[in-house]
Every structure is written in C-alpha cells, then in structure tokens.
Amino acid sequence: MLELRDIGDIDTLTVNEYKALTGWGKFRYRIYRSIPVMFFIGPVYYVLIHNRLPMIKMDVFKNETWRLYLNNIVLAGIFLLLGYYLGWYKFFITHLTIIVLFSVIAIWFFYVQHQHEEAYKEWRNKWDYLTAAIRGSTYYKVPRMFNWLTGNIGIHHIHHLNPAIPNYNLKRALAENQWINQYVTIITFWESLKLASNKLWDESSSRMITFAEYYRLEKAGIV
Image 1 (cartoon, rainbow, N blue to C red):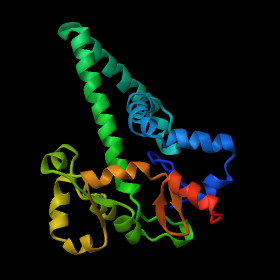
Image 2 (image 1 turned 120 degrees about the vertical axis):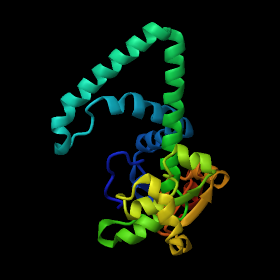
Image 3 (image 1 turned 45 degrees about the horizontal axis):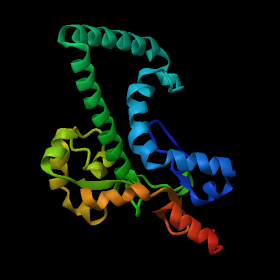
C-alpha cells in the first residue's frame, strides 16, 4: 500500500509526492535512491548498525531491547575470542568481507522483487492482497546455486501469497501452481540490472519510472 512505508521497506515516492518536495527534499531523495547509497552504503549500514540498535519504535519490540543488547555482547565476545586465536587481521577481513557481500546481495534481491517497472502499488482503499502478491513482486529466475544460497527468495510471488510456506518448499509450490506464472513478472539477472534506475511510482501509468523520465514529463507539462 502506498501510504504504508513499513519495516525494511525501500522508500518509494509517487510522482506527485516527489513533485511536492522542496529542492532540498528532492536532493535528499535522489541521494537516498542513488546506486552507491542504495546498493552499497545503505546495505552495510542496515546490517552492521541499524539491526544492532533498537531503532524500530513499535510496541511489539519494546521488551526485546535487552535481548538485542545481550545478543550484541555475546557476538562481541565471540568475535574478540576468534580474533585473538585466529588473528585479528585475518578474522575481521574475512568476516567483514562476508557481511558486506551478504548485505549487498540481500538488499539487491529485495530491491528487484518490488521495484520492477510493472509493479503493483495502490492506496489502501484500492489495494488488493492477491494482486499485490502476484503483480507486486517478481519471480526472479536465477541459477540454481543462487536459489539455494538465497533460500529460494527469488520465488517471491509465492512467498507473498503465503509467507508460511517454508523456503525449502517454495520450489515445489511453484511447480504445482504453474498458472501463477501467467500473471507474475518474470525477470532474469541481466534483465534485473536495469531496475536499478527505477526511482518513482507514476500513478497515471501505473509503473515505475526513472528520474530522467520524470523530468521529461515535467518539461512537457504532463506532471
């Protein structure tokens, strides 16, 4: 739903919301949606800092704050022990390399599942669960090895239809419900690369557009 920007969501403004911003607001949004921030700085910050601090202000998480800090202390202790016995440089270079690669890949997979051109985004009064699950996400067809490494999250439309399906059963659920693929957007890795340029949701055409497209529309007096 367009009015619901929830936990973990990548903020996506509509054309009208972006147009209503001040010059400073537009600049901030362009920086936020830039490739270095979206796919490198942002993922590392989210995994290494955001997830290690009680930054989600929701009642359901109030009693989890002490557990989060306890978890941080335990992890710090384990890292210090491993660094001491294995060597500080080798351990932290290896560990940080893995974490950085994981964060970049994880955010990329999440991004392409929801930012494709023919996505589905509606305001609450028009929003439909089934349509949002199938059209709002994608079937990201990647090599089998990547499916295994990412827990089959590329089969995202099935996951959205029923989040209770375990990741190891997503492939089976897809095979047994091939009719769904008539309606879902199927993308390959090479096709997904162009999605990095999608920045705004154009309600008039019901699709994601680039900043370049927006400014062409603005120049033509369409927005």
